[in-house]
Length: 376
Image (tube, one colour):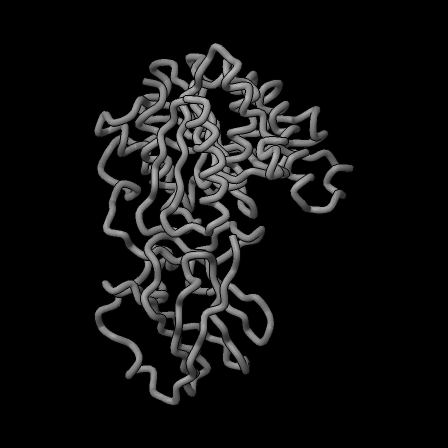
C-alpha cells in the first residue's frame, strides 16, 4: 500500500461556510466525536485541533490518491478540511503536521502501515459486513511457542455461533504487509461477515485462524526488509503452519480435519505458497489481490511452487480476487497466475470487486465470496 498526499487549497473563510448539514459522522469516529464526517456524495470533512501548527496536510492510502481538499484554520486553532469525493471503502489516513506524521484524535486507530493509523469508512451501500440481529460467533486470542522462530506467536481464532456442539472445518487466514492479526477482525469485519452468511445459510460454519504473517527468528529479523526476506519468512511460515499451528489447532479446538487457506496482498502469496506446497492438506486456496515475490520473466514462479498443484492428484479449489481499481502491478500478478492456470487447464474462480482499490472493502468482498464456496 502506497501513501498519497492530498492536495489542499487554503481558504480565508469561516468554517461555518465550509460545513454542510448533509454530512453524517463516520462509523470510524470515536464515541462522542462529531468528526470525521461523510456525505452522500462521499465527500469527507475533518476538524482537528493543532493550534500551534503552521502546516497541516491530509495524507492517506490507495483509495485517497485522487482527492483534493480545502483547508481552513480558524481563530480557535482548529484546522477544518473538506475533501472532494472519496472512493468507496475503508481508507487509512493521517495528517502531516509541520512535517510530523500525526493521527486524527477523533477516530479509532487501526494497525496499518506498520503502526496504529487513523481510518475512515466511505459507505458503498452494502450491509453484508454490518452487525445484524443474528447469532454471533466470537473472536478469541491464542498463542503458541514456536521452535522455528524461537519465540511466542500470537494469533486470533474466530469460533462460529454453533461452536461447542459439533466439529468444524478451519480456514487459515493471513493479513497484508504492514498489518497484523487485528486486521481481519477490526478493519475486515470478519465476525459480522461470517455471522451473517451463516444465518442466511449461504456458507458452512467454520473456524477461522487469523495468524501473524511474519515468521523470522531473532537473527533473521536483522536482515534487510526486502523481498528475499519476505520469501524466507514465508518458507518459515509454511513450516510453522504444517508442523506447529495445525497440530495445535486440531488438538485444542473442535475441528473436523478439513482445511482451507487464504490471504490478502502479501498474505495471498503466503496462502498460495503454503496451499500449493501441500495440495493434499488444503481443500481450497484463496488469493485476494495476488502478489508474487522474486519471480522473473522466464521463471515467474521461481519462489512459488504452483507446479505442485498440477502434479498432485489433489486439486484444491482456487479463488482469485482483485479490486477493479487496483494498481497495474496487482493486475499483472493476477494475469500471471490466471494465465498459468488457464494454460494448464486448472480450474479456478476469478472475482473482481467493483469500484475498489487495494483496500479492505476489496478483501471483505473477497472473503464474502470465498467463504460461500468452500467446505461444501
